[in-house]
Amino acid sequence: MSATDPNWSWRDDETEEDRQVSGLVADGVHEFDAYGQVYGLDPDMVRRESSRSHVELQRLPGEPLDQVVRRLYDEWLETQFIAAERYTRGVLTNRAGRAAGVDGRALLSGPQSRADRYASDELRAWWEQHPRITLVEFRAQMLGRASDVKAARRAREQRR
Image (cartoon, rainbow, N blue to C red; front, side, top):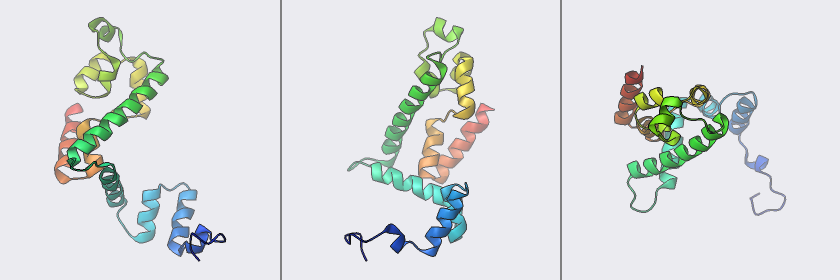
């Protein structure tokens, strides 16, 4: 049977491995962990390959990978800004930040020291559930290149 057959069901083409992955996911296992477990793969490698494939699919003709990642990061930042603004009811900066004219959107990226200095208590609470991610860390997550992973590790260590 095929997808063009009106009697076709996706279950007709489902393998035993597909059923195992589906069962693990239904039990609350993350899909990458389930896939790795069933197929004997490293879940982190599965995540990296999935992210890299996503970047490649978003790539415009002639666009360098780093430019794609920057564009995706900017899009991600916009969704983070909207969610943070909603959660904090628009109170992204503290009193010092408002006095200095700091735009709350700027706290979502850029220097950690600036975010530490000007973020409102509400924004800090939001970051507890939705960690602040720098472009360097985002690039490492999306591309998984060793140099990016090393740079992201260095950036995280400097924040401590």
